[in-house]
Image (tube, rainbow, N blue to C red; front, side, top):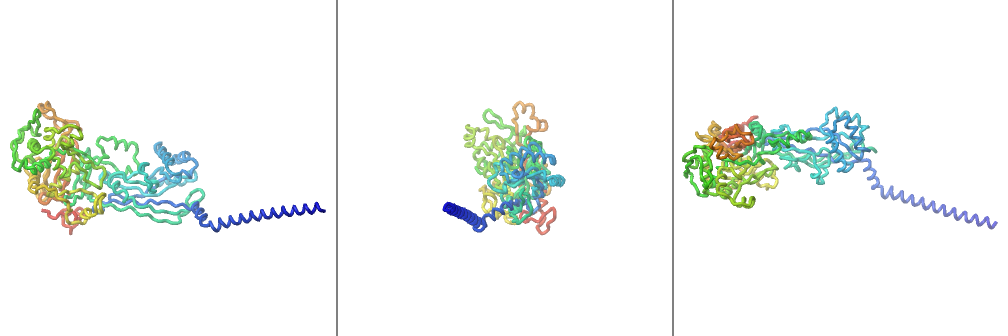
Amino acid sequence: MRHDSDQQKLFNRRTALLAGGKLLLLSALAGRMYFLQVLESDKYRTLADENRINLRLLPPPRGRIVDRFDTLLVDNQQNYRVVLISEQTPAVEQTLDALSAIIDISDAERARIMRETRRRRSWVPVTVRENLGWEDVARIEVNAPDLPGVLIDVGQSRLYPHGIMTAHVLGYVAAVNEAEANGDRLLLLPGFRIGKNGVEKTHDLALRGKGGSSQVEVNAFGRMIRELSRQEGQPGAEVRLSLDLEVQRKLASLLPAESSSGVVLDIRTGQILAMASMPSFDPNAFNRGLTPDEWRYLSQNPMAPLINKAIAGQYAPGSTFKVVVALAALEAGAITPDTEFYCNGSLALGNARFHCYKKEGHGRAALRDGIKWSCDVYFYEVAKRIGIDRIAAMAERLGLGQTLLTDLPGEQPGLIPSRAWKQKALGTSWQGGETLVAGIGQGYITATPLQLAVMAARVASGGLAVMPHLTMDGPLPGESATRSLSLQAGATEPALFPDLGIKPEHLRVVRDAMEAVVNEPRGTANGARIKEPEMAMGGKSGTSQVRRISKAERDRGVIKNDDLPWERRDHALFIAYAPIKAPRFAAAVVVEHGGGGSAVAAPLVRDILRFVQERYRLPATAPTANRPDDPAIALQNSG
């Protein structure tokens, strides 16, 4: 009996301990459940929602670009693209194999896709192909169960309706490369494009806008079930340019297709009305992606279609530079308008002889005739008297040897040499013969067509430091708002450019000679004059050599340009302003290896200046389709 009683007590103790242990475990479980479901409920509800709900970044529409009359230059169009999300497919290679049976995927594209899937986070979509047609979209959607991780995305792509005509000014957009990924989440979106050149690059951040967001419910496989909420982003800003599409079209149609460029600007405001460079390219091709053959053509073409020659082409200005030399000499007091030199066809300096383009010479000439006839010997004599440093100082005041635009990338400064420059750059002293060559715009001197147009504008404006620009509204990059406000589209007062300090009487002498170049017999460009007196222009021709003419060739007879290979022919240049009674427009054209400036470039400048004057000739109260109402550049004095 005693043994049974002890066994019973032991059993009861063990039962109590077991019951207590279970009670303790149940209490702990209940406490944990209370903690998770009550105290931590918000946290786990959020985690559950994040597994069920995806937050997606929405790309904003890129801003449009328009001309001065709000004519569309760049827009967006709908774009269907196929993307791949690597975390949603068990094997990217196999998925691409299946997809390549539906649409063509080249080896280069496949390599790019694999590279981007390795570089990006697994949940970031990678673009496989853009600009899909409806048939491609339908085939992919039908085969969606066999294409894990493959989605059709609807977005926008850039459209350049005027193609090659505006390509160098507008630039283009293209996909973001690894070096450009700066942490902005927008740059990770499939198909997102950024400005790579031209206005698209200058104003990229403003055109980009700000992204929106979308909350979508997805299933266990990551497929979207429905959109729960959407917050639209901020579209990119619209950029308004000073370009006039009609003037741009006219200039582009005039320029030879081989290799040429030109600029037309408003002297009073500095607004660029047209800027063209030939040959050009189609910016739409960059947006959709260049084929290897297209890229090979653009990058290896000796005519350099990708370069905006209006701001990056650097040419010896030739005789157009005589305007600079004349003003420098007048200011230095080295000559007067009546100072005469005799041209017999050449000038000796030491053992060297420097020739005039006219073998028999021009005879006796004063400054006006020296410019009108473009006599080289006259300007050899002038340059010898004032020296290179005074020439360089005047050239820089007139806009040469420096970059001028703040709203277009890729501008080159050209080169205005001096004694100090040569010593520093080449380690040798300046020579007297180099001064003579500089006096006719040859040697080390180079300038861009934009700089030449600005030089003409500064002379025609009465010596104001005219500064060119393309953007119409708001401060330009690096500019103060004060200056920008004077350049608004509706401004009727001239921009307040500073005075260059050139004496008005000196400018009148040079302008009178430039007008004689075009409008008087024996003027080098008389054959290219505008015959209507109210639209007459003043200008200066230039023919710059790209080869050296030896003594033996001169003795035999200089080979004509037409008999030389294209790349050895002279460049043809012409600068001008109009109308001469109240200068309002300035222009410059360079035709690479075109031959004589008077014969080749001058007629092109004549035609564009006649066109722009006709276009803005009617009063603002009577606009037409071809003569728009634009008080910013309507002529104040048509006669």
